[in-house]
Image 1 (tube, rainbow, N blue to C red):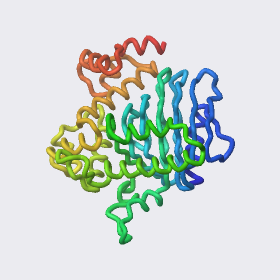
Image 2 (tube, one colour):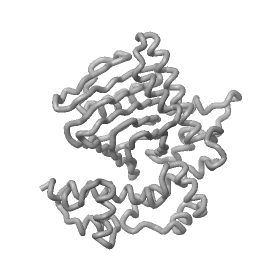
Image 3 (cartoon, rainbow, N blue to C red):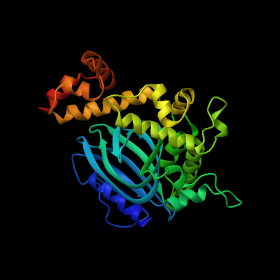
Length: 325
């Protein structure tokens, strides 16, 4: 856990939240007085680190990611928006979602949107702890960290948890005024609930899903992650659904159904999201034109691009360029 603590604390320090001790529970206000709120760090157990973030950053903030070694992150986002690019994989921070991230030497950048509330709860564990929870009573496993991540540096899954029991449970426990000793017991219980729910959502067949949710194998999960990587690298000239299905070795029916079940959006909904996110980054850089950005993210028609951008962000792309100059 020492490497994990060091990596997370370095991340939080860039948000102007600085930890100086190794106390089990710390509530630290921002050193930047223009920011509002706090970050709380807790250790429900020696092999777990929990971070609760409740703040408003004064401005947009770009943070360098440098997570050493193997680590597993379980994150619940109540409020906030953000984007992450790491090792060729792009992801998003979205309200009322749960994200499972498996990491091994991840380097990249995290972008937080300023002037809006950010409220998250994340739990970080080692790969060894993750594997322990995947072990059956007879000592065997159907999957483990290495098998799931498949040689990648980052593997990420995301699911909407709006109106689910885990969202209400976490909201209640985070704000319950327990005494310190009872609070730590409650937080350990919460951590285990979070891990159990996450494993059911992303790794095992969850009996609570109902008959409409597919039973997805580990190899199929890896193929779906590869589909996201292909779309990211071919954002300006994406493959058709049939071509993408051939590339990842999965028929188009499964690709459409499984992609939405795992990532909470359609294949082309995800493509639209990453196009808009890249377009925003290019426009905020200011050294371009709207037509150049449209072409860069794969839109032949500038008017169509502007309409899609306005629908996503509520502003015309030309307005973003105007603000950056």
